[in-house]
Image (cartoon, rainbow, N blue to C red; front, top):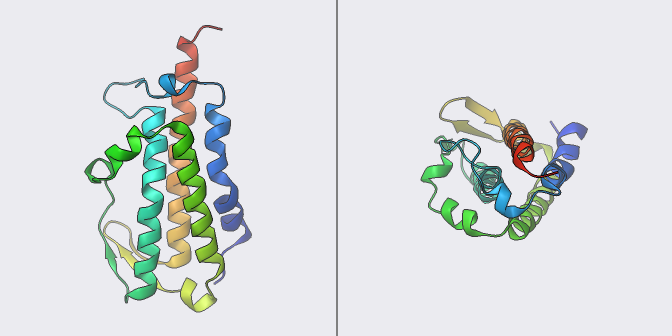
Length: 160
């Protein structure tokens, strides 16, 4: 089944919400943890940037292997995650934009046969490639919501 108009629209534009959510909040403030035990808004953005190449790699494996198995991704265990946290906000947004375009180009170049290939998630089971893309977008949306809530909390502490 081809990718739906909804999936394609979200792939093209959902990530742009980050800039809208963080607009006038300084990077310094975005790096502040509202809850010391949880990620800051900035760390959530770094996670989204770090995960896109992982997802691209998973899509490649789905194309090259027969129903590959994927363990649950844990950002804190990803050796690349600390490097992303050290980047500037501008650089993170650039990485997200660049990797998103690569993702869109890859997916738009796939025919129905390729989109029907499968991979198995350790917790959720077997997905067709189009379902993997939906999973990716919903995961991203979850973090966008988290960023929204964290920015709302940060704004309460900032002078007007």
